[in-house]
Length: 458
Image (cartoon, rainbow, N blue to C red):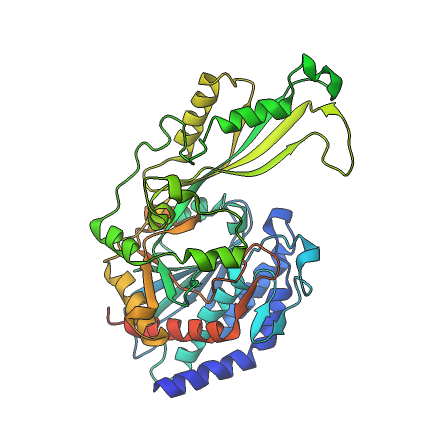
């Protein structure tokens, strides 16, 4: 196939299967609210089978089902090479509704951009891979290698059961490398390939100071939960954004020299990021001992994600709140363990006199980082260079600053991992008006076509 023929084939498939894709987006598969899970599982199964693949629905390890898909290499392909695609069919809730410019679960195209909840995270990326497979299967050469899918339904809820499925079905998912669920272009329109993720330790902090709310006039003599909690939180990080918890930075694995070189070359566009998010303050790295780029790739974080206490409606109500709670989100790097983070946080709170602050670990994931120099990662990169305009337009990154269950793939499948997707800097995943650009959707399909063709020889 020539490049022109490939372009035309991809465009035809996108057009022919457009309504099927839109119907997939219309399924409000919100895992945290257990909405539309089984209908979406069936739809994913049908999409894989329509493309020509075999499927199994795995549902014997708890949680939402995992969909397995398999496409064998064509007669002219390399049956000794197998790639695994990881995706998820669940999406985030759609709130706040009043900030959407169109119905959250009704696919809407405006000025070449497709808006819908879940389109960038992660449904479009799954569809891109199916379309790439179809384009190759329809070609004279056929599918260049074996392709497997693992499509789960709890990623947006922390993937609490995925490790059990991967451990039990490791032989089913065995492969030579894994293409991860996310990816796309950065603020400068460079295509970014990431080969790792940060881990997570996510906590509830809860404190109670009385059995009932109390008239605030007694604040002259009575402490309250809101002050107790804010003092406890303030003890965790100083005004220059250094985490003050003894042991928090222990056991961090040092990245390779090559990983450091790659990160140093990929400068963050702070001005563009400030514009996109409407930032009101400078980056917190201005007072740290490491750069913005190093912070995103190699260092852990500690973030207050939510606070709740007392009266929060309009007007006034003068009370001493009896209860206060907070959500604490720690993003971890290789070497850190969520359980150990829980231990050092508990020890810190007790040492600082906050024995009454309850600490509950809600989610824990370990970090993972693939070898940037592995042949699999380099094949993903060179394929991208052919599609996106050469080496200057492709950025290799050792870590995505977000989290995901990538460590399970390293532990049970022992495979290198690299991302590829059709998102862009303003996709707004998890937020109102989530989107992908139609041009990126087409290019993402072409990248997967090129990668699969190159991978058979890697």
